[in-house]
Image 1 (cartoon, rainbow, N blue to C red):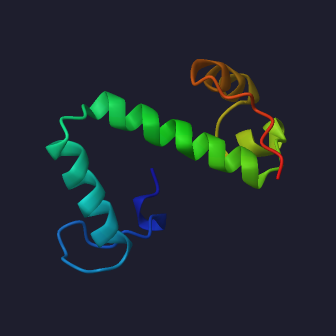
Image 2: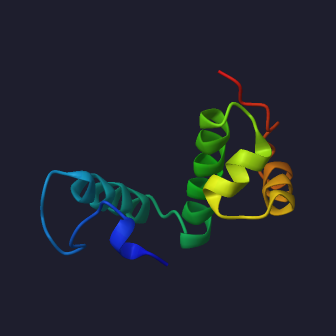
Length: 88
C-alpha cells in the first residue's frame, strides 16, 4: 500500500488538517461503539459511491480508479445495495 500517497501526514501529530479530522472521526466511531468491520464497510461503501459519482456511473473507469477488477466492483455495488448509476 502506498501510505506515502495518503494526505494524513504523521498519524501521531496533532494538527487541524485532514489528519485532525480523521482522528476526530475515529474517536467518534470508537466512542459510539462502532466496530472496525462496520466502519470499514461504511467507508468502503461511501468511497465506491463517491468514485462512481466522479466517473458518471462508468463502472469500468471507477474500477480502474479504485484499483479493483470491474467484476469485484459489481459485486460490491450489489453487496452495498448501490444501484451503480450515480450520474450527476
